[in-house]
Length: 137
Image 1 (tube, rainbow, N blue to C red):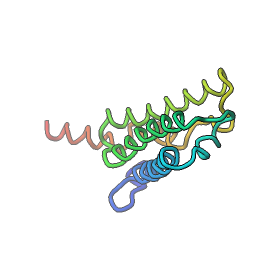
Image 2: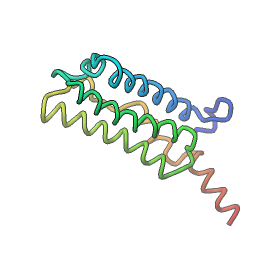
Image 3: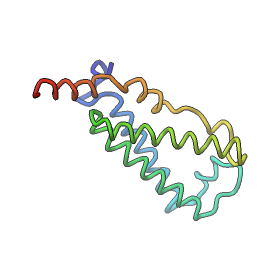
C-alpha cells in the first residue's frame, strides 16, 4: 500500500508524519514562548505556564519521533515507539476526560496518524527491510 503512495521517493505516511511533526512543533513553540492560549483551548480548566511548558516538552518529544520515523519507516523499533506515542497521548487525554473531567470529549479521538500507522504496520516499508535481510542472508 505504501509503495503506491510515494512522492519523490518517500511514502505518503512519511510526508504525513512530517506534517504532523511540523504542526506539533508549532504547538510546542506556542506553549513555551507564547501564551498558553493554544494549550488552554484544549482544556476546560486553566492551564498554568508550568503545565503549558510540560505539555510542550512532551509534544516536542512526540514531534521528534514523528520526524525520525518519517525518514526511517523501515525501522520497526522507531515505528513502534512513534505509534506508541500516539497511543499514550490518546490514553492520557481519555483519562483526563473521563476520570478528571479536565478535557473536552471532542479533543479525545483516534488520530489519523494512529489509524494510518496501524494499517501500514506490515506494509512495504517494513516488509522491504525484512526482504533485504533475507536476500543478504
